[in-house]
Length: 409
Image (cartoon, rainbow, N blue to C red; front, side, top):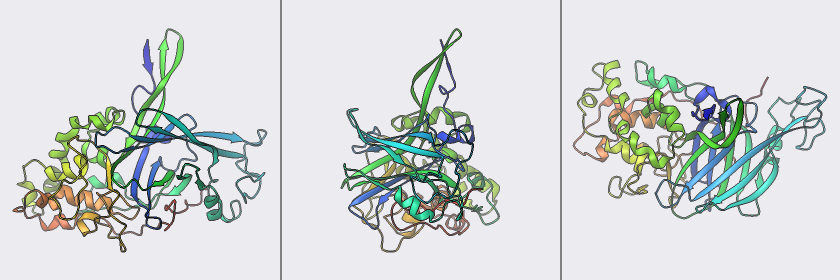
């Protein structure tokens, strides 16, 4: 018997339906008694995969294993099977007779002991944004797809405009002023869940899974669900996981991330910056110590005493989780640089829509955060300039926060 297909985890364009592209977690600004988690998948995909299990995981006790999981399963339905058209006229409501190809989803909550509870079934996704003629009043259509569940959660699943518009490849093609190239906002498939405020530190990550295929002779057997992608901290895989190991990493639980800790402690990009920009990073070039600052930001959370007034520590288990201290209230005026801008309600304390995580990550790797663990270290001037080109991050002020997607051709 041999394994076929999804025994090897996918990454990126090889499996766009299952690509976990971004994750956000923050105390809801307009409803601070709740926490919002948003997981995005793929780029420019027309819909969610009916054969993909999408999950959002929450860890309460710091062991990097889920204590709460929300599972989302999708089903595509055709209203008129005798046409290839997506719509046969304007879509003015979620039950419009003109809307031919529709998607629905179910929500299941799984507790720490594996007990599953189906919270909702057959919830509608909004249609694609086809423009004012085909989808007039698109914002109203999307708002109608927000569901308030009897169990207390609010959920949404559908296309949105991702606010994280920077080309990941540009991180490695830094220009003269060490600034990454910004691109336009992408259309992504977004799942958002707003849950009652847990009143504690949480760790969050998202995964996508597919059925494993097994072959025996001429037969192909369908096996169990196999995790093929995951996401927590922004750019973690791109900056710290070698390309040859990404498939394996995508299939691992975060509780096994210790095996990649050395790549965080001694990041390749910290070696590359002085080489690519001679004379700009002399102090970084001489920094050979273990990068305990990056380990704290990304793998354990910030312990007491590292940053006055901020603690995101979840324990000694080293794991790529997006950590959020839910007791920190939303900021009246958000600083896109989060921790580096003195705004403790932003990244790496969770991640808000407007957080400029590319700049924070690049500046941290360039040495801007090393004084947290060695107050005698003085970062290079260039470390404070590293980051993405300034660009607007348009988003809504209410759930599901991400703006409406661009009009699709």
